[in-house]
Image 1 (cartoon, each protein chain N blue to C red):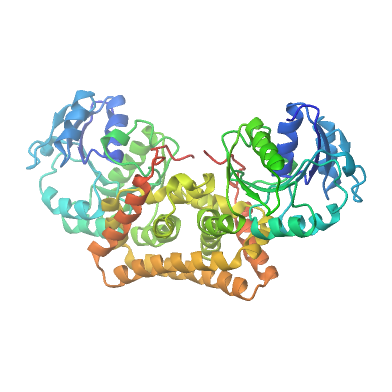
Image 2 (image 1 turned 90 degrees about the vertical axis):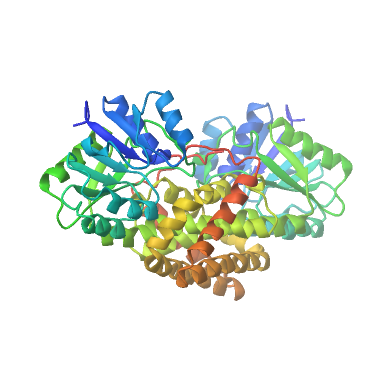
Length: 288
Length: 288
């Protein structure tokens, strides 16, 4: 589906830049837009993006695939602007980390038939064009969330699209996706930031940490813009996840306050059992 | 200092096994003990350990270096048993993760002159002889904690010992060490377990996590025996660290409950600033 396809990529950061690279490498004709003109220029200099889209989106009318690689709130703001302008589009897809609000906004903007919300479960704490790489989606898992009116053709196109980028995709209801991500992705990220802030206040620098502490604070290096947008869009589910985690910490506190060694041991052993119970609890070296 | 030195390694797990490997590779004559006889046999089969120590520690009298690589509580129990039996020892060192209680116990056991408490800031969530490797200490940072009576000769020997294993060492008061480790090591570990238990209760398997979530739950796979021992020995400092982290989560909760996007953004941005402010905030790919 990709060779010679006219693709518009809105947002040339880590995610959009990686999409543009992967698509260009497979022969797509990519036009791009970024609020940071320097990122567009870099993408054009490298021959990844063939032409720029201006702020009025002039030229987007001929795009067959339109990709929104923007923070959640910017995605939601962009969708109405695309309304009625995508006559050539067979697939419109975003790659933000929450899906419920975005899928609803696409439907409201009259883009429902061709729209698929996508969430690639990959990335890094880096951001910007400089962090993009062609192989980002290889072996990644992609959640695909349809609108109420996504056509079978658009669904098939979305599946083919990710297959050609060597990613695995699976369909999931948007509301269910967001609820699950509160636990699987957002809570881990927010705990990493909570740890970072705790260490900051204790006067501990990241360089003073061992491999474990560094792993635990890596996510805190992520883009605040992107994550504020995610967190704001999924606040209710995230609050429930934080509460549940607080309860686990409260159990530990009780055990420590009582000096109950058995209880502390059981708490730790329960965590280890969960770790071991998973088929991918592969024993790897910590990275340095 | 290592070639031809007679070294006794008590505990042939990940840490003790790695010490035995590193020392044997440099020509030391290593005798070893482990409560799991299979681990001793494996170490002898591989030619790392030349002879076994029995449960009565017969033969330890001739050891020049005695290394305790046991959980904290087992280290504390072992020290009085070594009392008066280490006439040949020039250096007695443990490698457990807390130091205050152990250094005090060594002094009480009359081993103060030759004793140095060591804490290698390295390791993995794996445990046992099978997880040991000769290079474990290369480029690792080692905290060294003296007793009140450690001799200059024993101090120098400890420094040389780690230098020959290619690790960097620095001296630190034992109580200060434990206080710092509550933040730098114990809190990250316990947050990882809290997250693991939260995900378990939410029905999320580790295989459902992306690279970030996997990093955040890696420490939860550590040995419950070892960590219960550490946590029990440093409970007061750990409780303070958990409280501080709880306060950070409480700030986030307030921001989310109020739907205060600016406050959420500032909270995330503060964490990112701490991450960036560190000289080793190196931008690395997440490991898969």
